[in-house]
Image (cartoon, rainbow, N blue to C red):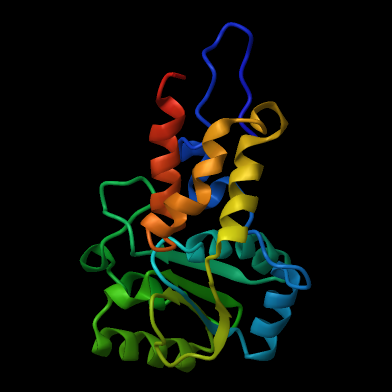
Length: 209
């Protein structure tokens, strides 16, 4: 949760450092969780796809699953392709020299490609062939079905948006009046949670009337 010292200005709870995928765990609905997804992925011989619209939490699910995969003995090779290469954790598809990596893939390797739709069809086929040939697992995120065994479909909702905002605000900001705008902003940004949080950041920065 955002914290501040008495001498520092209040932090905006919707700042990127609090909302980026690695900042918190994905908010699964009741009855679901990272452990269940890991078990399903194992049953699918470590192959699966996480699909869903823009800004719906696919990358957050990946970051939530990473420690689970490592605890299960998987050697994770993660390639995030959906972000501009200028960002610290982003990689452009053209910048990845796949031949430098595939030689190290084996039966304990879990290849994770975040934003797999950025690759062309034949590149995806080529990567799947190499994963199968070397016995490596393959987990991808995409906005549409890419033909891999389904693992999870992100379905943004107003309820999920409210839970996410409540977690970011914490107890100290629970009564912030801007939270009343969640339903409107969710509809305005067509369910894109990332864009909704950007809008809440700007709203939080505005001085009170």
